[in-house]
Amino acid sequence: MISELRRLIEEKCPASVDFVLLKTIADIGTGSSDRINQDENGIYPFYVRSQTVLKSRRYLFDEEAVVIPGEGGIGDIFHYVNGKYDLHQRAYRIHFIDNRVITKFAYYYLFANFKSFIMMRAVSATVTSIRKPMIEDFPIPLPPLPVQHEIVRILDSFTELTAELTAELTAELTARTKHYEYYRDYLFNDFGSTCPEVEWLPLSDIATDMYRGAGIKREEVTEAGIPCVRYGEIYTTYNVWFENCISYTMAGSKTFSHGDILFAITGESVEEIAKSCVYMGHEKCYAGGDIVVMKHNQNPKYIAYALSTTEAQMQKSKGKVKSKVVHSSIPALKEIVIPIPPLEEQERIVSILDRFEALTTDIKNGLPAEIAARQKQYDYYRDKLLTFDVVSI
Image (cartoon, rainbow, N blue to C red; front, side, top):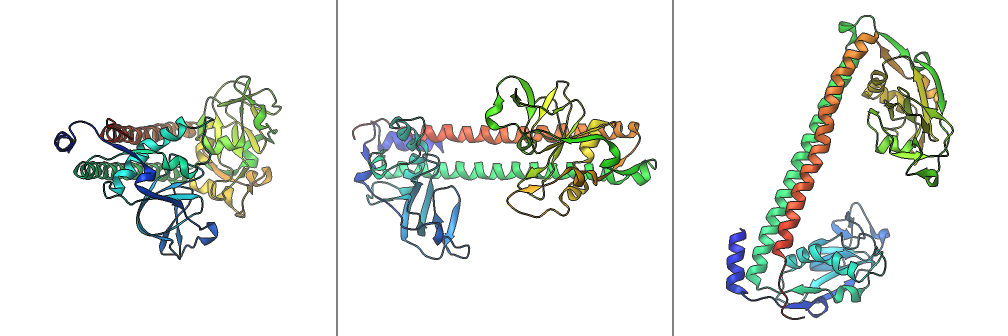
């Protein structure tokens, strides 16, 4: 496909390409709708100031155009639209009125070059909003139409292949994760036949101590000092176990140590409330507010794995009301019941799940890296295809 494009370029534009300003070939303006016009039962796409396309019962335009936000996601969000659509009052439409340009070609060119154009004209490091003159003065190349058509065909193919790969890799990750979760839950539900000595005990009988951490404000987190964990990091950063903290502070007061279980007792989801993990490092660390620390005499990783099962999470979520902020407590945590086999059996289960965890982590890290590599490859070829020498503006 690249060779065909090169042949076309040599044939149709052997020298270089004319650039023109958008204002000379396009009708540029905003919509008049607001979020109040959003309707989930609407039949028309409603473009706002985000990557997400909403729905509306009405349409303002029936045309082929490129849509970009006037605020938020500047230079990162582009929509190609062909048909009837509704448009937010702070989103811009670029409708081409010159038959020398193919709208889809312009869409790809804007996607590849508009952000750098805007940033060169920015006073600060970021651009929070754009105005119509900034769009109007964007220069766009006008290679012959056969060249534009071939570039669009190639980039459409690349886009489709990248989307298919991302979907396949995401499905693979989901399948592997479900496989791991199924086997993990099976191990903790099959003690009747494999280990009759198991006891099902509440955390109140397992814990030797259970206490809350103390608040560590955002401004008290430093680049150096004593390691610490804030409750939100349990949701976003730490998996079943961890050895090193990502944050530091000099303002903590409640500590935790090797083998301690940490629960996040505040969250945004009933399904994830009281997510827990175990610290396997050896430094003294501070526990932030809305964290409960549990000390015990069992295998640390075993307790962490047991508390990550579907059954344990159901117990953590029991009785919680879905709202903007969900809370748990020490009394609620103490009621959670998990199986406690002899330490030798705990070690056996941990060795199995550690291997599963390592494989799953490799996949979680490897698949996004593969997706990023393919996207980088796509970006490289897109930029090569959309680079032209300037004749005039």
